[in-house]
Figure 1 (spheres, rainbow, N blue to C red):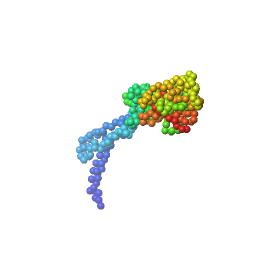
Figure 2: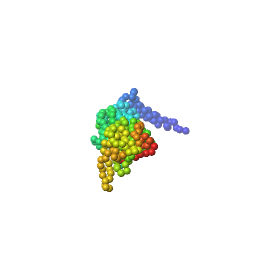
Figure 3: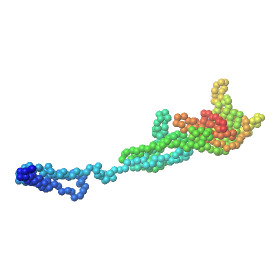
Figure 4: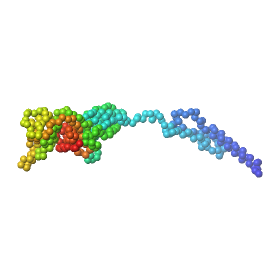
Length: 370
C-alpha cells in the first residue's frame, strides 16, 4: 500500500506547478483571426510574450519559458494553393494563323485560284511560291522576280487578312505550294504552308490513268490523207496541222495558219485527188523548212507543202475532231506533254510538245490504233 501522508506534499507541489504553467500559456496565446483577408498571402508577425514578474520567477525557478510555449504563426498559402486569377487574365492569347487556303482544290487550268488568309495580330503578311527540286528532293522558294506558270516568287504582300486571285495558265504543269510568313505586332513571326496545289485531271483519250490531261474539246474539222502525210483543219481556230510521213524529207509536225483556197492548179493524176478547200492555199503556196540530202550531204531548205506531201489519196472529209492537251506531271525535270488529235477512222495522232500549248511544232509525232 502507498503511504498517503508521505506522498501528499509532492502532489500539492505538482498541482501548484502545473496550474501556474497553465495560466501563463493562456495569458500569452494570440487570439484567433476573425476572417480571411488579402493579407492571408503575407506571413503573420511572430508572437512575443511579455516577461514574467521577477517575484513569480523566483517562486518557481523550474517553470518553463513562456516564449517556448507560444503557438506558431499561421502559414500563408502559396500561389499553387490559391492561384491569382488576375494575373492569368492579363496573359495575351498566342497569335496564330486562323486561315490559309487556296480555292478551288484541285486547281482548274485556264481558270482562277483564290488565296485567302487571316492571321491574328499581324502587321504584314507575305506569301511565297515554293517549287520542288527532284534532284535534291527538297522544296525551295522561287528566286526573287522569278515566275512559273503564273505564280510569282512573292505572290502577295498584305495585311492581317485578305484574299488574292491568280490566273492559272491553260498549259500549267508545275505543281507548287505556298508559304505564308507573317510579322506580328510584337516582332514575332509565324509561318504556314499549303498542301501541294495539284491540278484537276480529266479522262485521257489514251485511256492512261497516270496522265493528267485537260478536258477534251470537240470541234468541227476536216481531214485529208496525202501520199506522204496528213492535213487536219481545225474549224474553230482555222489552224492546219501538217503531219509529214515522207521517207526521205524530214519535217516535224507543224501547226500552220490557214489561208483558205489557193489559186487554180492542174488536174491530179488518175486515182489521186486535189487538196480540199481548207488546204489548197497552203498546199500550193506555203513553204516550210525541210531536212533532205543533196549528194549525200544533209541540208535544210525551203519546200512547198504540196511538194512534201504530194497529191491526196482520198477526198477531203469533214468530221468532228476531238483534241486534248495531255500533261505529264511527273516531277523528273523532263517534259512529256503532248497534243492528242483524233482522225476520222478512230486513230489517234500524238504530237509531242516542246513549248506547251503555244507550240507550233514539236520533235516528233505518231499514230496509235483505236
